[in-house]
Image (cartoon, rainbow, N blue to C red):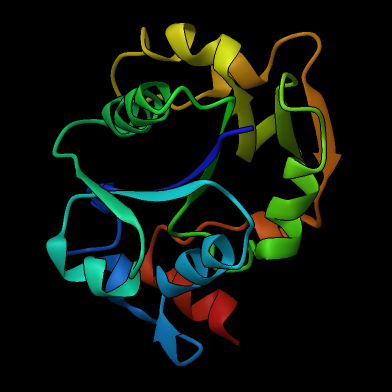
Length: 182
């Protein structure tokens, strides 16, 4: 079975200000380093990072790299195309700005059958991190604009995995960084 794990790290971070939030300090490490570590600790076939700023690549040693300059859906589609090119059975997707998502959360998603859409359960329904089977790849490639996999995740039959909501916090602003760093 071929499993690809992808970290989406190509956002524009417009709400964070002029600096790249993924390089901002979070509890003594770069924000994106937590996602890199979580994915590095998994037993998967390949690891990839979709990135915009090449400065973050130092955090993703051992990852294949895909440069993306477009929208959120472009990042996801680039990872899907990569996984499809490897004839992957599934694609695990996580975000670089969710420092509390660790390998145990990702492993819980991977513990389910590879043909099942598996998502983290959030207050508003299914969210990433999520594991997407190959059967979803063509649908994901039709996404446009600043949207993620929500349309695929919030469908009947998606298996929702309970995750502590504190772990799903993503950092979008300097205020959020300060609030969650303590």
